[in-house]
Image (cartoon, rainbow, N blue to C red; front, top):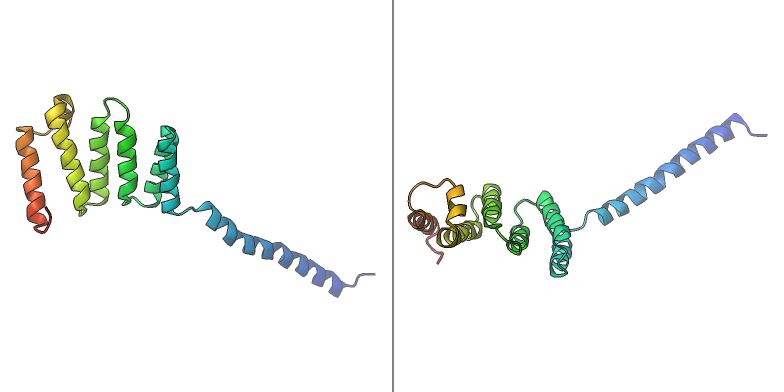
Length: 155
């Protein structure tokens, strides 16, 4: 026969035994689900090399959700976009988004201005979409000069 004291003791033990595995395994499962950025970038690069571009782009976007300042993810998306035709405008929009997230990064500015330069020389329609008044090459020259004055040690 079970007494009241044994009943309460068994009930509390079953409650504790239900909590302990959840507590222990929650830490293990959470670390498995949150892959680090380096492994995600490797996975995306692998997908891109296998020509699984949509999967690679999704992984790069996951990296940007985790860390919107990750330049390698922006560069990977740029490579995916440029592997398709007529995606120069999307590349410029991508780098403008990156510059909004990382306004002090010199590399992003250089890459954005380089894309402006390519558009000004090769694709006038893309440059017209940017709604930049004046002559394209003069605008790009001013941007590069302002970049050099901001960072005098850079070449």
